[in-house]
Image (cartoon, rainbow, N blue to C red; front, side, top):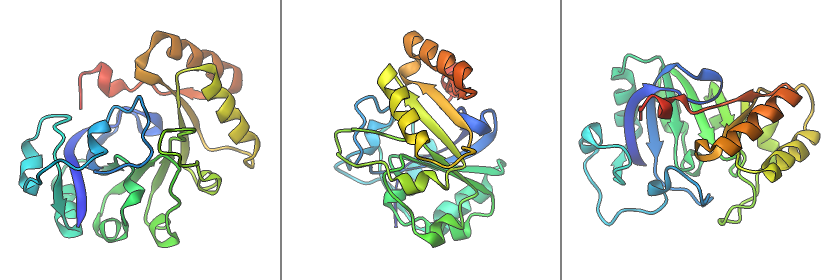
Length: 218
C-alpha cells in the first residue's frame, strides 16, 4: 500500500518538461527536512487516514493521507488524458515504486532529492529521473553521488551563492557531458532569481521558474 498525499492533474512547471500536461501522484513521507520545502505537509502522518476517493476532491496542501495499492493508483493515472505522469513527494523513493511503475502505461517522471538510491529494477521502469540535490539538510541525509550519474536532469534549488558552489563541486566529480542543469530560485525570490540567471548565463545552464505557480496552478 502506498502512502499518498495528493493526486491531481496540471502542467509540469519545472525543468525539461515545463508546460507538459501531467498527472501528478504526490507520495507521503520525507526524511530530508528542507527548511524551505513547499510540500512540508507531506512530512508527518496526519492523525487520521482518509479514503483514496477523498483525494480526488481535495484542496491543494490539504495535508491528507490515503492508502492505495498499485492497481488503484495506476488506474487513476490511466483515466487521465495526460500521457505524462509525475511521481513526486515528499521523497517518493522512500517507498518501493516497482509495483506501481510496472502498472503505469504512460511516460513516467520521478522527482527525487538524490538521497535515496533506487534498486536496479526501479530504475529500469523510470522514463525520466529528475534529481534535485539537497545538501546539508536537517534530516542529515547525504546526496548519493552515484544517482547523479544516471540523472536525466539535475534541478538545483538555489537561494544563495553557496548553493551554486555546492552544485559546481558536485559537477566537478561527474563525468561529462552532464545532463541538463536547471537552477530553480527558492521561493521565487528576486535575489535568488538573479543569481540563477547570472550563473546559468555564465555556465550554459538553464533556469526553472516554477511556471505553474506564476499561473496559479497546483
